[in-house]
Length: 163
Length: 121
Image 1 (cartoon, each protein chain N blue to C red):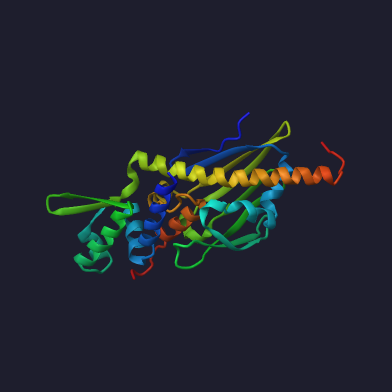
Image 2 (image 1 turned 60 degrees about the horizontal axis):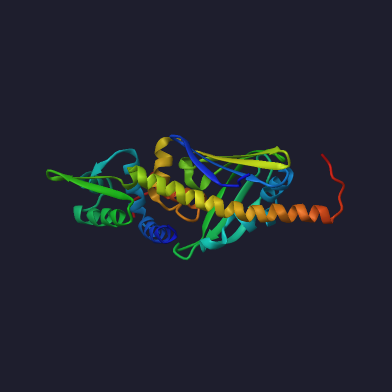
C-alpha cells in the first residue's frame, strides 16, 4: 500500500492531487474542517511561510480568510473565498477569490474504503489561460497552491492602472 | 530541486512586486506582444518597458525573441519541462502538507481510542 501524493494535469484547466490516508473519512474531514487542526498542516514547516490568521466559517455559503506572510513578500497576503458546498465527511468545494476571476474553484472529496480514505483535490481554473498564467508565474514553487493563486491573482488583476 | 525552487520563488516575487509587470504578464497570457506594443499599451517609453521585460525574463516568467527588428515577448513557461518542474514543485507542496495531515489523522485516531469511545461502523 502506498501513500504517495500524485498530481496530474487532467485537462487544460484542471489540476488533480490525490493521496490516501490511514484513517476514516470523518477524521480526515475533521482535520480540514477544524481551523485549529487545519492551520497545523496547511502551511508546511519547510516553506518559510507563516500563517498569521485563519478564519473559516465552514458551511455551505460560509466564507474563509487566511492571512500568510513570507520573508520575500513585502506584506502579508490574504487568501479568501466562499464555501460553495460543505458536506460533512465527503466533500468541500470553495472558491479562491483573491485572484478575481482568474482563481480556481477547489473541490476536495473524501472517499473511505476499508478504513482508509482517498482524498482527491481538484483545482479547476476558469480557462486554460488562467492555469497557464499560474504556472508561468512560477510563484507556486515550493509553497503552494495558495501562492499560485496569489500569482494568478497578481496576473489577473485586470484593468489595474500601470504603476 | 529545493534550491531551484527557492531561487526561482525569490525572483518571481521580485518580478511580481510591480504592477506594470503583473499587467505585462496578464497581457502576454492572452497573446504574445512586441516590446513596442507593450510600451504603448502601458503608456511607457520603449526603454522603460525593456527594463520591465528584462526583469520578467530574468525571473523566467517571460521569454523574448528578436525577429528582424521586432522583439516579441511571450510567457516564459510554455516549455514542457518547465511545466513538469512546476507540477513537481506543486506536488512536493501537497506531499508536505499531506504528511503533516497524516500526523494529525494518526493523532485523532489515538485520541479517539484513548477516549474509549465506542467504535461505530
